[in-house]
Image 1 (cartoon, helix red, strand yellow):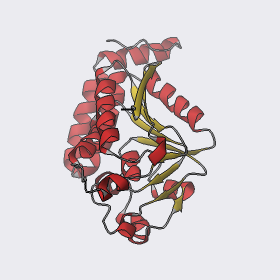
Image 2: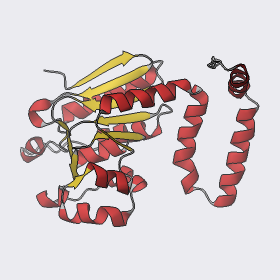
Image 3: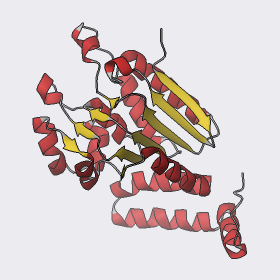
Length: 249
């Protein structure tokens, strides 16, 4: 059976490539299973970021409708687990998108911390047009985008552009050179202290759900503990000495 997901390591970055081009990288049971394995291997490796990208003209066309039409309704839990791990892993995750994204593919993309898309990319949440709702993917989507901004795409299935996706907060970068933009983002991540980057990812996820007093208390503790730590000592010394820091293990 042909592999549908590839995993490569280079320069402290893990790159996961969806490569099931005959069905536009649809979320078949095989692809989702291989994607879960690739994420596990990336998390186990000594890497600083995980990039999720694709081969072919589409990032992901959503669920594998042929598979489902044949009566084989796969368990959704493996896809949920992949999305959770992309959101919760300590390493920053980056979606590198150079082709169309539809339905469940939008949710997979939205589970990443940073989303870089080519300027010509289009998106559509087409679930209502086949008689279902964008249920599972609403979890990552509604953490990025307000319900009011998603109402049109959700209720009509209408396509929208990269610039519209940027304005609503679904994507973080629109680029004419996705590869170069992703490389620059990865270089920025690698330049930071690993523990500081991980802590920053966690606070981006956790602070919005805290009440103000609790948020200030927890962030005061985090700030003071990190300023007393070895990374801050090295970072400030390197700043004074006008050199790149060498982060402690």
